[in-house]
Length: 492
Image 1: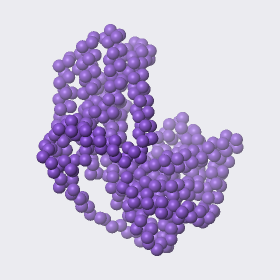
Image 2: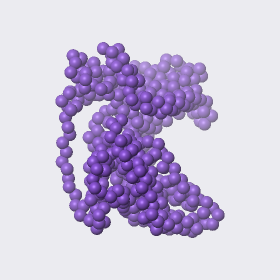
Image 3: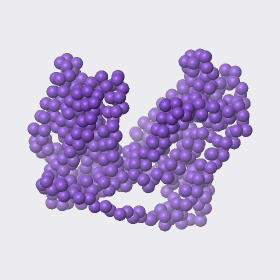
């Protein structure tokens, strides 16, 4: 039966429209995979001599184990955001006389063959070979190598457990980040030395092979818990059951002061608050607000006006960037119905524009306390806000006319690239780099005041020309109207 499942998976992958339409992307992913394989191989063979050179008075094997704590938490976070459980299309199988346990074992076994599990082996095995070649006891090194393989698989199944437990919560990545942050903080502030704890545990297992039963037992428990979770959900009625939620109404009467665009603003605000993908754009404003603390708390960045220009654009424009880049794809689910109504397209776009510039103004006001790190930082944030309102908001709206990918608003919010195309990557360059280049050139040749003045003048020019720019943008959307309707009507 497992062989039959493998055959079905092979046919499904290579016969799917995804493979045919994204052949170039798949080839690019293969090159990326080969690149990382080469990097990990180089790390595996070169780590021992590097550690000997950097720590000549210490045992490189002990030093390597002391760094494994950071690898474990980094690997867990990367997997959480990038690795997904390889669930089969099991609905057709649920009506056939196939044991559910067989299906679950196949899914879990397939996850163990993930590229995320094979990649660390390209570093672990060469490093083990180098240890044996340099006189380390072979039995100790082999025990350590098998322990590391067990840890890789434990992280694999632990990731799926974390995803399953946090699947129903918004911003499900926050608990993981908090836990990882606490563990890192305990080690960084020397409250509990996690590096020594993990390193000594691995060395202890390597010196006493019978202790390898401990990571094996943890691996079995993680596998068993995953098996239990998946088997409980593997029912036709549970997979078809719709989720019932209570809709909470909010007072949006304040939007009426914006006149004829108020209905569109209300729709956008409801859409933002009621869906996972759009709600994440609103919560990202918190990250944008605190983004400056990463730079300004360090003297090397605090004294850098170039860093302030970058932080200013990003901090005040975080919602503009995260929400604006998917206009009008946020409405792709009902875009055909929306376009069949007797509405003015300029009003529809202007409501999006107002939301973006309101977010810029709010982020600037909330960021005023950054004046604590110097008045130039506050002035830089003000110039960045004006530039975002006058220039970047219009660039975002214009770039949205090239969006052709439908967005499923109910998919998970964290690091979800569904609906992302070349437009989002290309538009990020002028949004972030152009103001940085403009300020850098002006600051280098004429000073800080001139650099700030140039950004403000360019932003004010965009504000003055807003009506003309909106007419050009609206014309572009009207020309692309039916192409977008056709693209958003496609399921893949």
